[in-house]
Image (cartoon, rainbow, N blue to C red; front, side, top):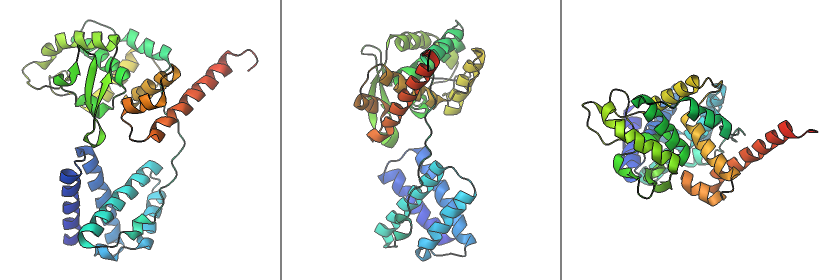
Length: 298
């Protein structure tokens, strides 16, 4: 990467960190997307950002398709580069038209995976126990299902974020937006039980994160994925699990049981209702499957 590109990238990263207050994860994605784009520009013999035009933008997107990148990944990269050029246009009057003219690829129509209520009941039942590890795992599972939190929000929870009197939890979501989510009696009881044994797991560590690993450190997103996979295996369930699947399950079960779309949108922390509407397709598909499996003349 030449000096001009490096300086422009540093300025942009400072902008999204300090002025836009984006999360560390989002900042890293911006940096990675732009570094990949700069590598492409250098392979095309372009040393000056101001030389980039529409044909280079098209060539880059074509390259991403040739590499068989997912459409969601391509769409994110276009957004990252478009934001970068918009910033340069404002700061240095560099033309931002090349990527402004590009269309985002149409998203693949994939319905989110979720657990049926019977499957989730089995997962809870088979993982009960009196060991601190089992108590923590059940509390983690209960809270993810009770609130529909993202895994990043869950591992970021601190003890002061949980209000047991009102059974609500304060969550810091995307874009540093705070929201309040209620949780039910099952999650309340599981969390209360877990906090009694948390000190045992903490050992000599000192931090305020709710969930801890077996060494007493802060639980990571990777650790959550490992715990859930372990729980699935222990329940002898032949399915894959990932934290977002519990978020999908939370939304699907609420809609199946009569919750309105706006409420679910607010609980999930979606900026746009369109992001929540995909769950109406999931519930329709669930109804169809139940009908096909149950009706004598289906």
